[in-house]
Every structure is written in C-alpha cells, then in structure tokens.
Length: 327
Image (cartoon, rainbow, N blue to C red):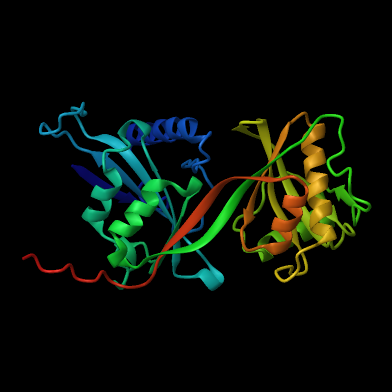
C-alpha cells in the first residue's frame, strides 16, 4: 500500500528529515539510471513558478511476502511543471521510483489511488493543469504497459526522439570526406553573440536559460548568429564506445523542416564533435527529433548511430470514461 503527499516550493517546506531522505533517494536513482539514460531529477532543478511535487510513501504491509519497511519509506517522487505560452495549461511530468522498490507496482498503485481525471476546475490534483505530458526515456517498456492499462484516461503517444551516438577518434578529422564544411563556426563566450544565441534557444521552445558552463559555438556573425550548438563535455555519459560528451541542442534561425541537407546544421555538428574530440572524449551524444529531416540526415551522414528511442506520452483534458459494470 502507498500514501501520497503533495507539496510546492512556494508553500510550507519539507521537514528536514524528509528532505534529506528525498535527496538521498534522488541521488541513488540518478546513479542507478545513468547508463540507461533515464531522467536524473533534483530538488534543486530550475522549474517554472507553480510547479508541484508529489512524494509517494510505501507503507508497512504484513501481507507482503517481500521485505517491507517497518515505517513509511519514500518510494517515489513526481514533479508537475506548468508550461507557458502556447503550452499553457499543460504540465510536464517527471517521475522516478526508488531503485529498490521498482517492479513492485508502485506506479500502478499511484494511478489507481489518485487517477488522471483532468477536467476539474483546479486541474489535475489541484496543480492547475488540464493536460499532462511525460517522456518515457529509452522507451521504457513499463510506460507502454501503463498507457495500455489506463487508456481510458486518454493517454496517447505524441512524439519520438532518438538518442544518437557518434564515436570520434583522437587525431582524426570528424568530417574528412566533405568537400566543404559550410559556414564557419566559432566559440562565443560572452556579449551580444551569446545573448542572441539565447534568443534562438528560447524561440526553439526550450525552457530555462542554458547554463553558462556549456560551451557555445555559433555560425554567422556574433551579433546575430544563424545557428548555434550547445555542448556539455562534462556530461560523462557511459556508452559501449566510451564516455560521451553531449551536443545538448542544435538550433538554427531559419526553419529547416522541409529541407534534408543543411550545410549550417552539418557545420554545427562537425564543430561540436571536434570540440568533444579535442577535450579527450571518444563519443558525442545527441537527442534528435525523429521528424527533423535535416538534423537526422546530417547526423546520419556524419556517422551518428541510433542508440535508443524516447517516447512522449500525453493525457488530454478529459475525465476518465466510466469503467464497465461488473457482471
């Protein structure tokens, strides 16, 4: 059996012992999930105002044949972050279960306990949102099972992103076969170029400002770059080819949805991989929208290989359909 507890950062804080247990659980989960690529959550993550948090407690149950805690134990953490602008009314859900308590039906118990009815005046569970979306990283098999089990709530598959890897070799050119690398790409550390690139970041639909610790490479003039790639050489992601750094985002000023080949996208990818190579890394990792034709094309031609698929599920603004009557 489980119990739940909602709280918000702008409300009464958690008791010190509860916060300590939560931080410990999130660190434990992050360490267990780093290789699988599942979300790594922290209570210190930057979030939108109005974000709500849910603590899931596993209660002692003598009927269980498994080892159970003698007192309520923190089993899971769920975050609902309200989105803005064209996504207003939607909450992005992030969720993690303590590794020791996985495969015990915690998520099933949670949904059966609180439901997914979104049509109430104050939104789902009082969070103010009437739509939900959540990413199943690595296309977690439990996500599909849960979507089918609770399809009466209107759960749908919305998007797919590919996690792709490009091995690089020290002392070798990243793009030796290309006759032209396209536009020049250079690093920007401050000033108008960095501010203009941040505008590109925001215009692409990403939330929160990119951390200053990320390396920023841009194509075009510093004052108004045509595109940018943000790089995190310290992401330290384990792969079968070695430790990877991440190409966090590739953004261009002009839309490229209908183009397959794009010299600027290629130039940004090449520059990003070269930076990771020169930092001593053997692999570059990138998250790529499966419907972004030019980014997919250029990544493939540069040797990026598909590693896993992330699937986004949505729950629309509707109340649950009634269960069929028992016979």
